[in-house]
Image 1 (cartoon, helix red, strand yellow):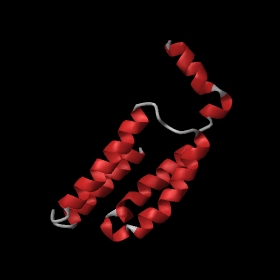
Image 2 (image 1 turned 180 degrees about the vertical axis):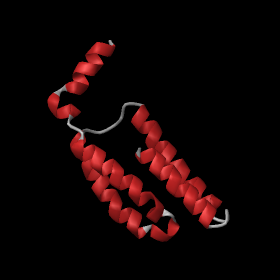
Image 3 (image 1 turned 135 degrees about the horizontal axis):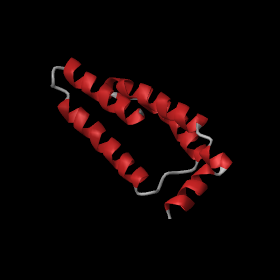
Image 4 (image 1 turned 90 degrees about the vertical axis):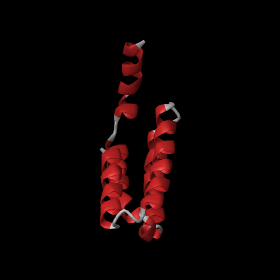
Length: 102
């Protein structure tokens, strides 16, 4: 869900900017691709660190509002809500799911 919100926000920025801001969109997409690839590689941090990163990212996005950060705030808030409400690590469900997969 956060990834779809991020891509939607960047698409809105691209269309609203008259396709003039495409280098800025390309930069944001490269950053998002890097974060996504790190997450897929299994380097995702624990729940506490994910919540801290999502909270810490909000001021950065507000500071970079005119560079497209404003359009990524909904995605960050969705990521924060998901990270905050995810209880799979606390209950051990993640370890059980991994054991079943093996």
